[in-house]
Length: 304
Image 1 (cartoon, helix red, strand yellow):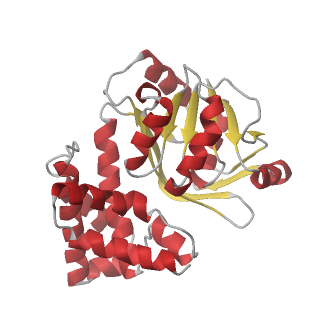
Image 2 (cartoon, one colour):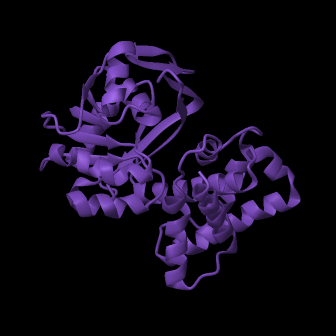
């Protein structure tokens, strides 16, 4: 399959690099500065699962390329509109769009842009960042990419995609309940990023505090109530499972949103928490913890 990866950042660079390592036909859609960096240094990946360096195929937005069978989209939510416009020329009748963004709000935007049939479900679990030289630094034992049809069916096209993903040195997993997986990931990442950004702390000291733990529990309850109010297919015991995961995390674990704040960057506040608050308003639900987290992020962004 011909694969287009939007950006060669921490996530796209990592999973695209693993596909390149396997021998798949991968092209990266990048900005001019990143293209020059890749030409000079290559795509450098330093990983606990093995280092690698490639000189990848790259294109700039608007250049003729393709057709592509699948487009991997891992941009930040605040860059989504620009990403949609940049890939529009490369989405043909047969192209699948596989987004790896956290959250849910992006799904309707992509469906509006390209049609419901072209957008499949996806998410990833991986700890990666770019260093000052543009190398992808991957540090976690987990490096999972999960994908699937929203219907849960094993269609011919999804099985073809599974074949292309198999055999990589990362875990590409086909799910028959991708929509539930995405909502579960949304709840988890909103909770982790919410409390770590609110308390400006790694997860350990928050867990160790009586009221820090109560805040985690309250946030899980609020997010679950809002999500179920709009028919999200959450498992009945998911809050307990999420709390167990949080309790098992390393004491020094930070969220990517918190890291963005520490760097003075924009955050995905609207995508994570503004969206939940909009849903809560529609359903007239009380969400004091979500409101506090969102206010904290709004105030931070007003000052950068």
